[in-house]
Image (cartoon, rainbow, N blue to C red):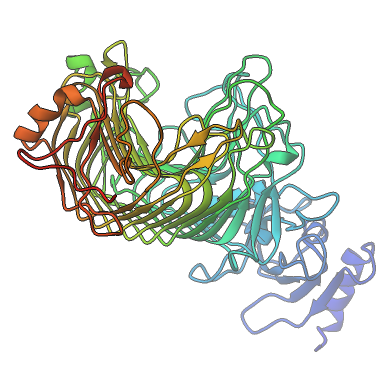
Length: 606
């Protein structure tokens, strides 16, 4: 290293002589710049008592040399920027600021703001503040091949606050170094909770503000470990809870999410491990549904010891928003002045749908609904309040739940194609629900295509009902609720099995159970259905494959068939025989009966 002039060197020795040996090195100045200095860490740099204006200080690490939090800082004795803990620092004994030299187009790291990345150690540090500071400063963060320990904190309720660890804001980018290399992990004993025992809901990543859309968020190349088993299990813990349009989540592993139950109130909020919606009527939102690609879900937390009723786990959720009930919290000003209360609020003006959306190449696997360890009923994918969603090329396997389950939302123009649901309790379940004749969340399912999916039904031992390949279920509500739905060219198979109580369960291939026949233009064609087993129920024809298709209620069959509200065409068994629906009437007590075109007889394999 070149030497400074003797007078300058003497001045620096006088100023810095009291510092620990080796913590500071003085280097030569470059033409037009101040001298170059070196410090071992940021703390030592901030304790300096004299720095020439424009001096450049090379710091070996944020906490210690080599921890990737060091860098080059420029001192300005007149700068007044707001300190942020990583790129603009406030010296302890000097005016001005120490400013980190960065390339804003390059990678930026949480280590610059003090992240440790030691979440695997016995005494890990909290890294969420550093990650949030980096996101606040740059709108992005590049996470290294480390485990970042995070915590949230309980907050008194405020409409600008959600309960989470890491902030999501407009155009934020969170990128890891590989889906198995970088881990964001909720630390042991965080016991995150909401504003009160009944608000026991926590997201590791969520909107930084309640009424602000987090637009175009990107999360890539890492693992999110919710570490449910490391908490008190009073709180439901999700990985990502995002509200805003245009999100991209890809190449991410999800682990340790879980449904809790609060012991004082009995509250059990459903778990939505990854969910995207919209901030209702935020005009700045793009209103584009999320893209989920190459995601892997398995190993939820264990809640078998929490007791009482426990909510469901739904792994992938996306869609828009609605305000059918005119909730006071849904817009900043309170109740929506544009709310239309007629028809129980079920109006287009109260709907805020997302458009598009894609779920592809995602895997949900190896999860059992076993009350001893996992009491939550399981769903892989759900959606609602959306138009134009595509669900394709996904795999759900060895999973004691539904591949796709949709309950009581509006949705239109959905395509579900080329998925594999292998060893599952249900392939596709589309439901509507009411309460005392009033619609819950005002459900409508319109213009849905289900094609070229392979569904293999498994042997879930603890489910209340037997497995079903494709199910449309609707409670007794007015209006047409199922419209223009086509289910074709799918493969469905399953076999009977004894459940945990020794009762034999018989799978259904396709099941329609729609009260009052509130449906129109339902087509089931060219499906290959291999469910040869049949039970001794009084409504069941005693022939192989008689449970391939079931329609309820019989009292509506003639009307639906004549009006082509429901059409079954060229659905066949593996032997090539045409499969007709068996009909069940109220209370399932009628004699075995087939739904047939006029003048035909059952074409069932002997």
